Length: 232
Figure 1 (cartoon, rainbow, N blue to C red):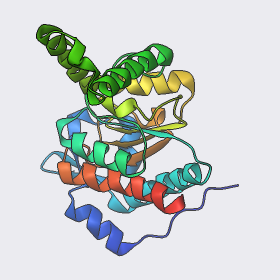
Figure 2 (cartoon, rainbow, N blue to C red):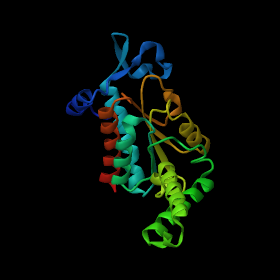
Figure 3 (cartoon, rainbow, N blue to C red):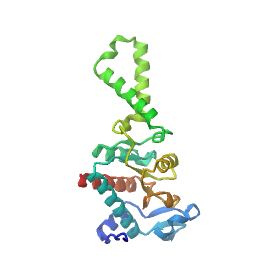
Figure 4 (cartoon, one colour):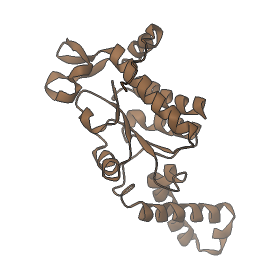
C-alpha cells in the first residue's frame, strides 16, 4: 500500500519560511541523499523545498501520534547550543527523557550502566532534599554536591528513561553521530530534523530543514512534542 502524501497547508509552509527552515548549508557540504528535498541554491547556499519539508514533518508527526496512542517512549536529543532549551522544554512537556548536552557513549547500547548512574543521581538528590547530608563533614558535603552537579549535567534528562526508548528524535544526525549509530544498532526508529549535510538514508523519518537556527529547531521540536500530546 502506497504512503498517502499529506495535502499542502500553505499557512504551515509560510510558518516554515518565517523560522528560516529553508536554509541549508553551502553546496559543497551537500549529502547526495538530500537532493530530492532541495529547491535550488542561492548565493551558494542550499535551499530546501518547504512543501516537501512540510510533507516530511507531517509524516513524522503521524508516526509520533501513533507512538503516543500506544503509550510509547521517545528520547529527545540535541547537544547543539541552539537546541538545548527547545529539547528540554519539548521533552518535559510530554514527560519524555532527553539529552540536551554531550551524548554519553553507551546511553543506549550500554543502558544498564547508564541507568546505574541515573539511580545514583536520584539517590543523592533524595538524600540532600531529606536533609540526610548533615551527618557529613563540610568537605564531604562539598564533594557530594560536586558529584550531584556532575551527574545532573550528564543524566538529569534521563530520569524518565527507565527502559530503552521506542523511538529517538535527533536534531542533526551529523552532529549526533554516536546517538544515531547506537539507535541503528538496536533497531530503534530515528526521527530527525537534519540539514543538507546529513545522510537521510540512515533516518527512518527525516525532516529536511535548518538544524542550526534557534527558531527553526524550536519550531520543529515543538511540533513533534505537540503531535504526541494531542494524540495521548
